[in-house]
Amino acid sequence: MGEAISLKENLFAAIDARRGDLIRLTQDLIRIPTVNPPGQNYLTICEYLAARLERSGFRAELHRAHGAPGDSDAYPRWNILARRTGASAGECVHFNSHTDVVEPGEGWTKDPFGGDLEDGKIYGRGACDMKGGLAASIIAAEAFVSVVPDFAGAIEVSGTADEESGGYGGVAFLAEKGFFSPDRVQHVIIPEPLHKDRICLGHRGGWWAEIETKGEIAHGSMPFLGDCAVRHMGALLNAFEEELFPALSMRRTEMPVVPEGARVSTLNINSVHGGQAEISRDSNALPSHCVPDSCRIVIDRRYLIEETRESVKAEIVSLLEALKHNRVNFDYAMRELNHVAPSMTDREAPVVRTVANAIDTVLGKAPDYVASPGSYDQKHIDRIGKLKNCIAYGPGLLELAHKPDEYVGVGDMIDSAKVMAISLLTLLGPEREW
Ligand SMILES: [Zn+2]
Image 1: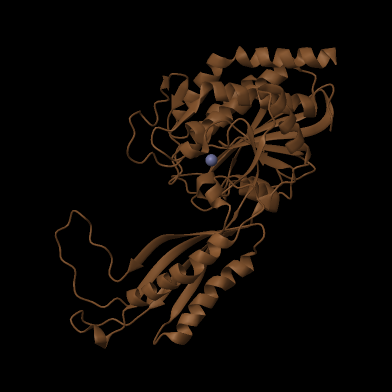
Image 2 (image 1 turned 180 degrees about the vertical axis):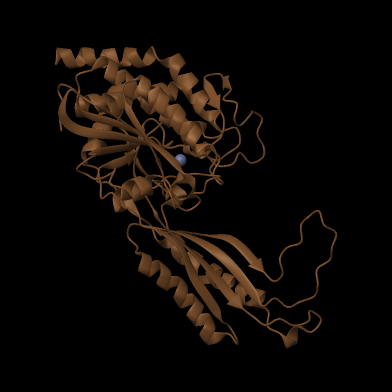
């Protein structure tokens, strides 16, 4: 026991000693603008990470997701997977971070790719989602290896593409190749910004579809000679308001989703397009006068572990069929765009219990267990990799993700790195429990 206590203290000291390194690493990562779409600079960030991790004794491989959505010679989908094997056989702990960030958008008071450090916060697009988490996991792994060089098993760090656009050129690709098979990897921690004292067990499902209502084109001065597809869409949106939204908001889940408002089924209407294409705002051209013969919406339906893809779809179809039955000339087409099943790791899973104990050791409190309203790469590790022992745990505030002046706190990164390092000690150290 005495040895374990001193190993913990040595780990804390090793991480505190790396504070400057952690800051520089986070800044370097932010300064490589990996904006997705289109998916910029993936090779640059992978080469940076490979060089860094090879210096600390990892063997790094780069994998391009040839043929994945968005992959092209102009914007290749590169991923890095680095592995360091210990002194004896044991389990493998894998830290997976996505390297892509969303566009900065408007409203910044800081340079979104500057990595400014001010009052203990590092600013930039991706600071919390999730380059800060990636940096914290690297520091945790490096500190652990320096303190426990003869550890058992293996540590892996991956930096993967395209999480913000579904992860098909990133984790899904690596999972298809077998890199997340349970015989290869036993524990996965995804350092998404869920906050340093929370363990994210999984996420809601998602179902996306395009719905088109059909009409008939005619001169706009005689709309009675045509059939307005936008009015038909209005009838559908009205049915959503009257029937669907109230039903969804009543459907509560056992999943600990945060924020609280997302603990029910939700629907977002992502876009509406009807009639002729919009004239650009800087043009002074006038529209021609036509009755629209087509109107399309894209819907984003987030669903609960208690629901199924089939029931989600059937609920929408029954509204459409009722309109077809009751409304003159109502006709529609529906096309599924994408689907993600919900995922929930068991609270008693080894990685959950390990990180929970580590949070208690570092922060002196029990963790909060949460689930994410939106999905993240756990879906691919679960469905394709068949690996259930996976959580999201990392520094940063979820509310700042994708916002202007996104930042990550240096103190939060240090605390999270300590939790990750203590978790490595539990899983791979001399008194390992699993
Ligand atoms: Zn993220």
